[in-house]
Image 1 (cartoon, rainbow, N blue to C red):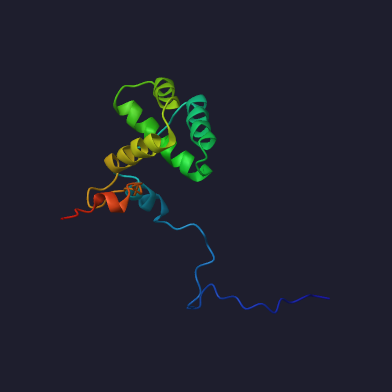
Image 2 (tube, rainbow, N blue to C red; image 1 turned 60 degrees about the horizontal axis):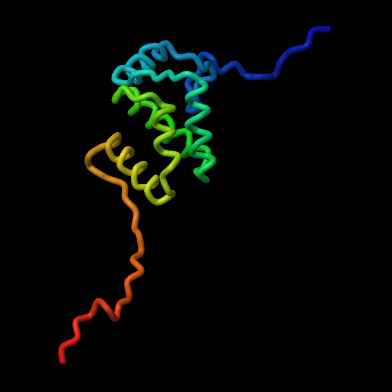
Length: 134
């Protein structure tokens, strides 16, 4: 007794569905052009762990800690500064000063059409700011 499959072979039929074959002959070319202007980054694992751990201990989100760590390590490499010396310098800084430094580094490494910033509420008394004429 022979069992026949009732599935329809659509390999030679036109369809609106995506191709089943995940490999594309242009994948290699696409990957070359997608990475053409980007430089691959590689850092020692102990430096990555130290920088990410530093920011996570300062209550940064893990994703933010990895992103900031990557940018700081890249900037440290460009400036010929050792990462551990940079971390030692940042250890004595308060949270607000750290936010300011991180913002400056992020702005330096992003497109010039937009910048990051933050707002600090002033604690001045509004009545003292007014000019009162008698």
